[in-house]
Length: 310
Ligand code: APR
Image 1 (cartoon, protein in one colour):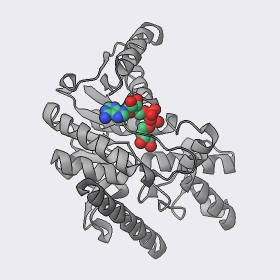
Image 2 (tube, rainbow, N blue to C red):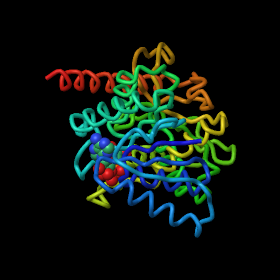
Image 3 (cartoon, rainbow, N blue to C red):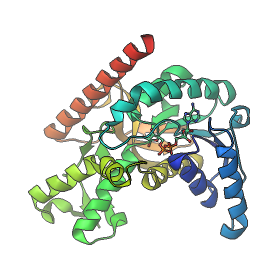
Image 4 (cartoon, protein in one colour):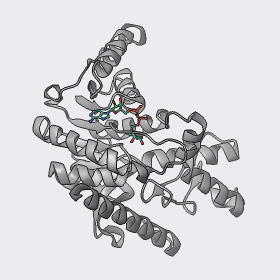
């Protein structure tokens, strides 16, 4: 199994590390910055005898070595700075992602694409448009991360292990995301009976602001440990045909009453990519929030269409 990771910055290099050290796949790391991917790949290869895996990892600036990849993860682009929204990255990252997907379509046309670059739902839309791939094979990683943040904060609140918290965050990757509090449980017990509504509202807001909180703390970088863990969960489910159910940004064609829009919903991930979109029951309020989130994604796609043609 082989994964190409595009972008050898914080998120990409950490993805590469998790993939090889977790014995999930061989990795080709590519970055536009001369020597960056090759240097980090060599460093990771030299850690192998210490960490104890036998995965191959190489790095470079060209796309020919991406040939034969089962999955391509795209993390290239600029991250946020304090005070910026993800949408502020659109002009720069839209162009970067377009040029990368053109290369991937040429050299690794059979790969499944997992997008990470922000603004996530729009860059995933761009990846599908430029690659011409079927919708099952192009998805964005956001819900896995937003859900992990929500579970982490609920775990903090209850003093429970976050892995025992089951929850889901749907919608676009931004201020309009939709954490589903009504169905969240810990060890099978609904959290609604354990956390007061006003406190739960604060946890939901902290989840929405989860990325900004970290940018505010680090100032010169954005989050990468949890984002890369979210990517690797998705990659592993595809390569091992595990059928994990995770939220991911996928193209909806009528599901949840939303058409022709990439937005985060629960999906089953296996060898074919997105093998099922799971249309779970939502309350009227959650459904309205999901539709509002989809409308925001459509507005940002329209902004990209204007930028692209300007
Ligand atoms: N082709 C390949 N690599 C590129 C290109 C390009 N056209 N343009 C930029 N890059 C590389 C940069 O050289 C850099 O090494 O992308 C890398 C980005 O790394 P960081 O600046 O560390 O950013 P990171 O924190 O990894 O975030 C990357 O993921 O979570 C999102 O919002 C985040 O959009 C951002 C992306």
